Image 1 (cartoon, rainbow, N blue to C red):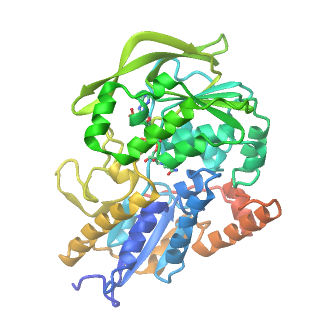
Image 2: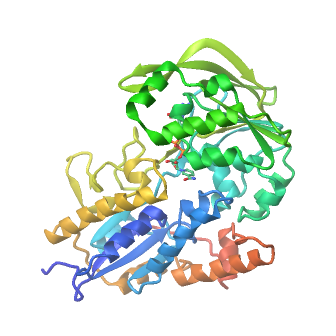
Image 3: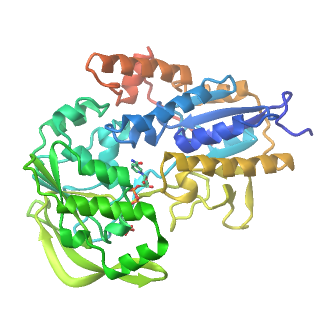
Length: 475
Ligand code: NAP
């Protein structure tokens, strides 16, 4: 049999997920000069772009301009989008093996990591990832409730997600009105009584995970004074020595930014954002109705362990009177049906993107992974580009040595027939472009980038379709 990848038999690739990692894999495939390739991209939501739509903060529109690159790829004739189609519900891995030469999982990290402290399950304690999905209009999270009648909120963690959450809580109504934040979220935030937001870092300023522009932006908000205690902004001797030895200019600048903010006098703005260092939550305390009323925190000191500065608790405790808590200590991947998963790392086990069968310890034929579900939830959008290039490199190597799946049905039409049979309400890229246009038009009337659809049935009706109750068997 001749190898796929020629015009006579194009290489058929299924990509599961439609976020940046998925699109950078498409880009890397489409860049190959002598490769005839067709990509079908699946997303369980009708809308493409993953975390660019449902993760990137609504007041960071510039970051979303990467979509232009993805749109260009998606309108090529050898690309098809199948939105509203879920792996394990409408199509199975066995189906994909029957229709594609190669399969790439690019499903990101869809859940959060827990703190594992007493009281974590109290009312008013939430995953930041849920709040982010809620304010970004993710259909699965639009019914979430966050009690913004509370005056004091704690955000645990000092990564960029924690920064996004703290910033959105501190934005003025006028600032929010210019964004594409979900309409329902804007209404709730408009009536927010939040006065004080604590961001809690377990280590020191030199170890803060947020990036420098994000830290600077926090200190420049019109509606909130940023407070850092000067003693917590000062470097401990271990961090000082580590920074001097590494010569890391970005971290040095980060510490300077934070110390500059710590030296400022507050300007009596309506809200206060208090960034604390060297503290860890140890317990959430609730009232008789199981609603969080306070957080007990312990002061930490830094110690060197395995070549890294880690937080070690002291015996000094404090209590923060907070009625709302967001844990923002990292995302976590979730397993996909019939795809290997490493529960301890929250990723699909792989070597450079080739999925490794946990039993045989050998690469699975024709199955690959890219993005956060490959390497864990780290890096910015652009980090997914070299990551996808690495995965596609493995795919091409395997293709060249004939190590692909051998699908019985390998035409685009055969795949579309299957999908239409399993999910008649699949959303094509042209359908999405129509939805996109409606969202942008609705936004224009309000001086906003777009007003998002937040409900799948509403999206279908806007396309003149009737939602149907599904009874689907995939195996
Ligand atoms: P992250 O950058 O990994 O930050 C996680 C934070 O949680 C760190 O401060 C970490 O502290 C802390 N943490 C972990 N376990 C903890 C515990 N048990 N108790 C207290 N603190 C704990 O993760 P993220 O904020 O979820 O962001 C994920 C990725 O998306 C990052 O690469 C981020 O840069 C990126 N992102 C970028 C943007 C942007 O570019 N604007 C926006 C959002 C997200 P330690 O360092 O001590 O572990």
